[in-house]
Amino acid sequence: ASVALRKKLFERAGDVLEADAADLVLEDGVIAVRGAPSRSVRVSEVVPEEGLEVLESFDPHRPLAFSSGCHACVVAVDPETGQVEVLRYVIAHDTGQAINELIVEGQMHGGYAHGLGYALYEAATYDADGTFRAASFLDYTIVSTGEVAPAPVLVHIVTPTDANPEGFKGAGESGTIPVPAAIANVRKRRADAVVDRLPITSDRIVEILGT
Image 1: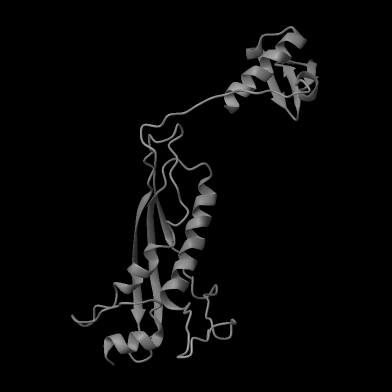
Image 2: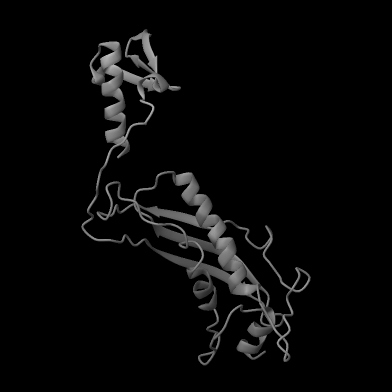
């Protein structure tokens, strides 16, 4: 729709400037003839009072585009204290064609921090009477910059989807959801060790490992 609207705008400007629409450029709200900046008109001067309107439609081959990825980690676990140290964390993700790769990277880094808190620290607990016991940050532990270092290694995979014209896929939860599963899979010190709830706090790790 934006391409069609730009075409319509340039056609109107071309009539005013007596130039072909293909020879026009738009910058800072001014449409000018390429190579002749003195021949110009402001966008506001060619847009009618009722505005410009176009109608476009898009029928995708399939309605949804799914992103995919894989998380892997190396951790050190102290069996006496239950403390976990993430030594290396790798996120391989395929979000299709990225509009801004730097923003996608930031989303993965932030998602990892969120997932790490969900995996190891952030417990919403209640007592036997149903009173919420984590009503402040004195009782509800969140990750800090110390816990999220070292930063995860990101592996970008680009497989554009045909579900939209530009090949975009989502990246919203790709950095968060797999983290607890990746962390939980390091518990295999004993064959019968099972992680059945989150977060996997230090006390839970000591219990799971049977130390």
